[in-house]
Length: 142
Image (cartoon, rainbow, N blue to C red):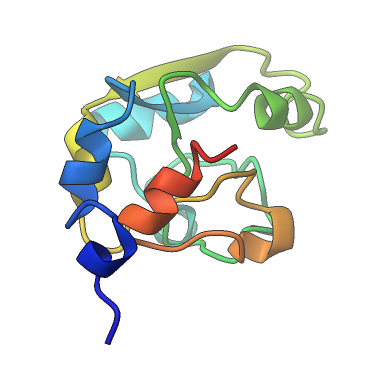
């Protein structure tokens, strides 16, 4: 059986994260979605928001090309400008040009089930990533 030690990897995500030049996670969203985030005190995944009749929510990726509607897309340090540029041109958002970028505690990356991808999550329906220190460090690979 191969272990992280055998592969020369840090033992866990926290140890891997400590080796990287990052200090925050970021999440961007249309400003019109901010009310429910503040009201609920959390960023909820789109599959949860779509079933909540009390929440005003417009998905930026209504087809969830990443294949993980139960997850929330974040990036390290800076917003995913590539995807934000694409999302801003979608018909649902042309009349809502204001977006917010929320800076989040880096410790959220330590939660169970977090997936790390070295590219846009929609590429290959999220198939380029996974959980654990190996996938986190792949984000900084040459």
